[in-house]
Length: 356
Ligand code: XIL
Image (tube, rainbow, N blue to C red; front, top):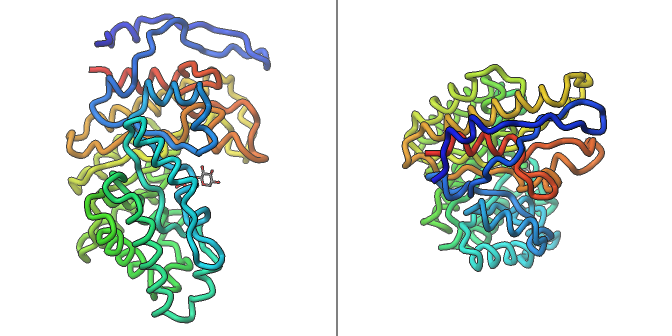
């Protein structure tokens, strides 16, 4: 059993880094097994390319108890242009999870961002669109029935600014926003009746307007009889949001009494691209660890029955989607572990919150 006081007393070091700024790094702090100290599953997003990476698999074995496919269980991977399906990659992830005694979480069945030519060609034929929609959900959600513990049935239904809901190929094909969401949950329940069925979205803590719209959508869908049995908050945290905002939203989310999944935690240190972030890295890390601590503590404060899982969107900084593409500055440290598998300050923030 780890000693919570040990963390608080543990010294930190100021180490020089490339830019000449002092970075705050913990020295010789005990690194407990996160899944051993947390009273709920600890998840991580993964890709098949990571499964054979020894550093990655050792960290997963030590700290995690659940996996989510980063993208290889999505429609963009599974559904082919001719309407056929390919499952090689998600099956490998499912087999790895089974062999390593890890829970498997399904992400995601229906997402506005994953329009697909197969469906775009059917938007004028509602009956065929609906038949193919049902077939896709039945086939995918049914494939790992009994292994997948939960599904993000519908992802990101609320508009970017939080002022409304997204119109998308699914609402166009099925005659309305509530129509596509209700149908997705009904079909998912038929295909995977044992799985917890989630409505998942992002920026719910960062943007209170969006959080409120999401909560109103949940309330309306539940009243309409949607079999939503879990609520997912992605938690791609903005490290500069006011203290307390995360706590307030988590309490509001808990009001439905449903299991809650922190489904995609990361906390970028990068500026938002509008203005260069001139703050010392140490100051950004302090804000990052404060927000992660607040999220972890708010999750810990939930009743155990509502603590579905606490998932990070990757294991090491180099595994993060934020470290890919042209926006990557090579410096971001949005996850629990560094490239070598060392614990980042946000690991200790979470571990402190989870420690009994
Ligand atoms: C991202 C993946 O990490 C990328 O690899 C992929 O190219 C795009 O999608 N919210 C979600 C996730 O629900 O599915 C997204 O994952 C990140 C934002």
